[in-house]
Image (cartoon, rainbow, N blue to C red):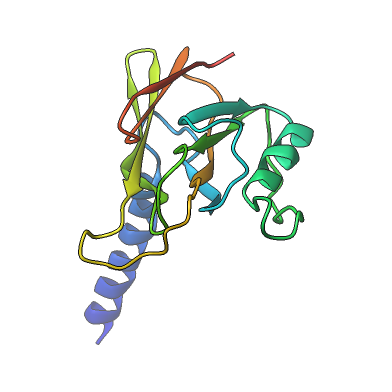
Length: 168
């Protein structure tokens, strides 16, 4: 019985020691990418896909309110506190879409580094061809928290075109 308890204790200790290693993001301990919010009827700046790098709380509130669109109430979602020294937020719009059923999500892996370029991988979900959807114009968008350092440019992939931004 003592050997069994010792074995269990050793296994638990080993698992506890390995957990931080498996949970650490790629790239040497950078903060993880996190989906903050998304919407399907966002208030667009235009009909084309767009990406905006957000580096302060006031601008974050302004772009977060765009996720609610003009149809729903103009209230902003509750957002976590962001340490803008270590993190940035990206507002990404898929642009104008012809029907309901479109949405944006993080793809796998959501974030990679390619030399000096941070690459955010998104998935533009489309309605299945056989599914009946409302004939209403939509503007899917997403707010994503990313690390603030370790790259000089940002690429957003998965919208049918690559969007590029300087890291500031």
